Image (tube, rainbow, N blue to C red; front, side, top):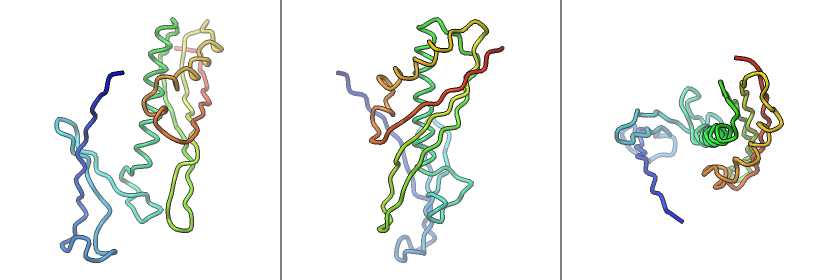
Length: 156
């Protein structure tokens, strides 16, 4: 087994002058400022008063899950001789919050729309999704079920 290091820099930007001296006196905003990469402005979940125009941790987790799945699907499709010409996913994650305010994801459904050329064995392509979870770093790391409901377009 080989270990890998991953880093990020998270910088809180919500100090309005008194820091966290008062619960309502600071913003729940931050930047992801990883050196050498574009800055990502973030806020907390809009359900908790966050800015709906900014990414929140929940957005980033479901996006990371969908992106990891996509990259492994493309790899496995290439190895299987399946040409993918377009791939787009609109994943859906379902969460819950209990009376104490603690939250968690219950499940996620990936919903990729995949374009393949005429003559592609769609059953073979669809079977690859089940194999992705043997490899995907993110899917192997989360503690909630992840389902995939792919749709295919045969065309360009």
